[in-house]
Length: 371
Image (cartoon, rainbow, N blue to C red; front, side):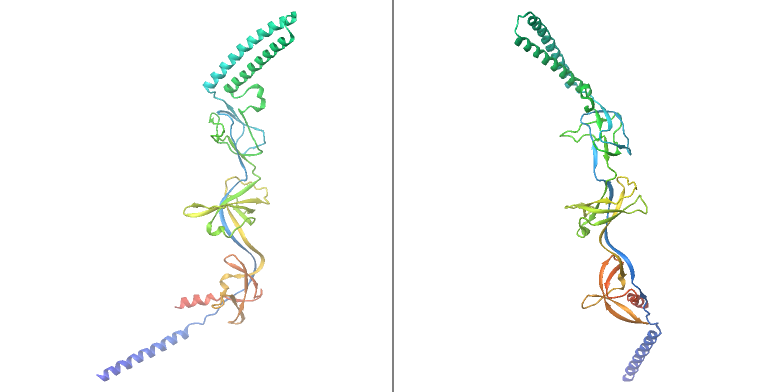
């Protein structure tokens, strides 16, 4: 019995021994890790955040009528340029029956009054010429006649305005002729000849006949997530890329950040606006979608290395790199870092442009492969 136990122990020890020898043999057969190196580069590093939006006019003016009616003529079309005061459209008034009837009765009453005053004036003039009445009585009769004549003309004008929307005495001030209030491009004409329009007043914003804007003054309007809004501030430079215009970037200045966010698809979004600066002759259509790269920080032509080369001390948490001395011998050097774009990082001090830096995570990858 004891002899059997002894044999089993000897067999177990022999298995462990030969297993250890096999493990050590295989380990010696593996090739040693040879670390590659990378050199610093001179780069321009930009730290930015992206906002999506569109290009719109800085000021868009909506032309609305001051009288209700039907579009009789349209003198402009989208894409055309107009000056302040140019004709946009002409409106034909559809009179209100009750108002038309009331003003018509006023005209008849004013005409009857004028006829009576005219007869009285002629009688008084005849008597005054014969010396029967005084000058005061004659002048009073003349004044009453003139007032009746003026009232008759005023009621006739009111009747014409109610019926047609204008009168000859108004000239260019007639509100049936819709004119441009600004100089710019016609962006849209949402009405057609024959459409009915409603006047703009305190109770109704009215029907838009045309929208105008100065296309030389365009801005970017977009939105940023709440996680990014804390990083940006007004007057930061931005680079705008318009999807419909290839190989073009437009410079701008961030000049507005909404103080209040809005919930969209479960996320809080903040509206931003940026004014385009240093534009060339490229025509940008209103409403084109665009992306804005808001430049948070920028380092031009600085010494930079890939972020993957940076290591951090376990105790001090300070960054360092390993610089090649000779062969596979490396020396630890502390570095001071600057701007990072997530791929490259600026190195302010600690290394030179000629240094070769150890690709330390290459060894980790090979160890994982070997395992």
